[in-house]
Image (tube, rainbow, N blue to C red; front, side, top):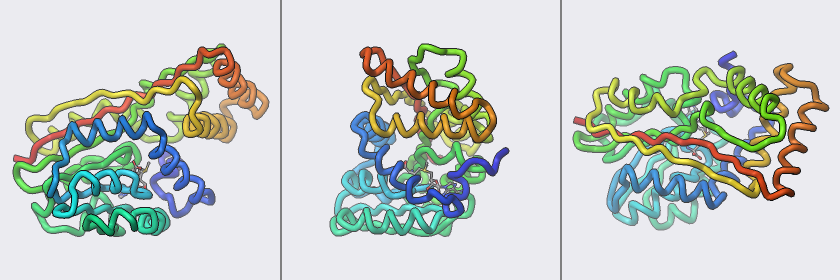
Length: 271
Ligand SMILES: C[S@@+](CC[C@H](N)C(=O)[O-])C[C@H]1O[C@@H](n2cnc3c(N)ncnc32)[C@H](O)[C@@H]1O
């Protein structure tokens, strides 16, 4: 059940390159860029900050962080996948000419940094995928200085809404897939509680949305992947999965397609 989440063991995935391309496609989707930057302002990240991103993937957030902290700041990204880190090193090269960026292989639950090393530690769409979320948040808190900020942002798959002529089938596919795929598909809503349990103070919550009315390439790929998983997990047969996907194209043609995914962003202060 649990080991089905491909983001836990990215290096073992036969389609790891496609998954990395998916991170970049998501990162370049304008509504996703705005969503990410609203969260970074909510933290906030300031000029000159020393920032750690846990589960940095291909470096989408690292590049945004580098622009925010500027020449005097520092961005450190860690990830447990060596493949994604090598992509991140390539993709972050131009940003690294202007800001100090370090990309390191590390487990979120065992961070190789001294206590109080950072002003800000954050994890974006990562906590959903980790087995021991409390251990990762505890480590993020340890390496953050007193008065520093710890921020978590995750989707919550119980809060995904999409138009489709067959609502029952849509619920069956979407809910069924996340139940098979993730240990905690409703991760977003638990983030404030995780921060408080780690001893953080003045916890704030930003509930935000990714909204798409045109079936952006990233959304299309997301729905196609859900359809493929539904077949793999025996929830529907291949013909039904294809009919389900065709239902979205019909909605787009009719101008009635709406897709919203909820993201919860939570921030706490290290006492
Ligand atoms: C969905 S990606 C998000 C990447 C990036 N934060 C972004 O928003 O584009 C999740 C990343 O977390 C990494 N990851 C998962 N579990 C981890 C852990 N226990 N420690 C460190 N990284 C982890 C994965 O390898 C993957 O690169």
